[in-house]
Image 1: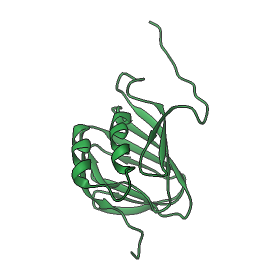
Image 2: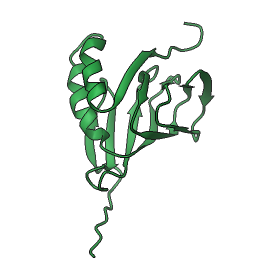
Image 3: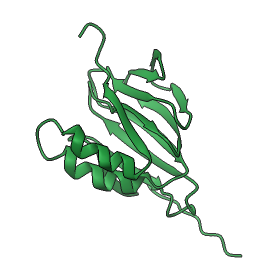
Amino acid sequence: MMRTYKALAQTEGLLRQSVPGEQMIYKITGADTGGALDYFVLTIQPRSGPPLHVHHRQHETIHFLKGRYKVQIEDDVFYCEAGGFVHVPMGARHAFLNVADHLGECIITFTPGGTDAFFEEFAPVVRGGGHPDPARLAPIFAKHGWELVGPPLVPDGQ
């Protein structure tokens, strides 16, 4: 049986966009792994992060490389410095926010994979200008087994 491998340079991979100013470089996707996992590098703007949400069919890991992050998993709120790591079990409410004054970077994995398809649909809605309408986002989240359950985190004191 022939096995295929993938070797990529730092800037190589499948590019996906998130909110303005943020991008993901997928090093490997579910399509590459028979659905097993995704692995991507996310650049994240200062004072930015996803809203509180749930993945009903996937586990997620986040390894924070640059920045400082406020993290919520279920009802627990804590901070991760550069080098910090979290595992978000399937079904757990979670969000994170880069509270640093500079661009952040993290490595994210999902098991099983396939999240690149979510971001392909999500990006045009959130990059259209203005605050995205949750009513337009909810069906995209639902299609991929995700659910919006709250707003993004805010820095302390706001």
